[in-house]
Length: 77
Image: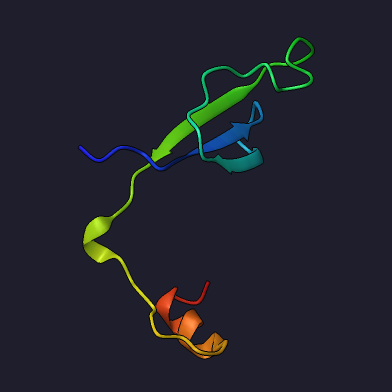
């Protein structure tokens, strides 16, 4: 199994609405960095992000910035 290269952390409120989302490069081992940890309840999901090595899109031999080529390679992102 491939190891995760990052983790997506999402916090949801009591109704399931997304409050904040972030991506971190090291595996979270604790959540003490939440400032108001003692004052409210937190609903947190931590999702490992595993690279899809079979469908990698590579853009090589670029001499200048070509936004059209990069947009096409990244699916409009």
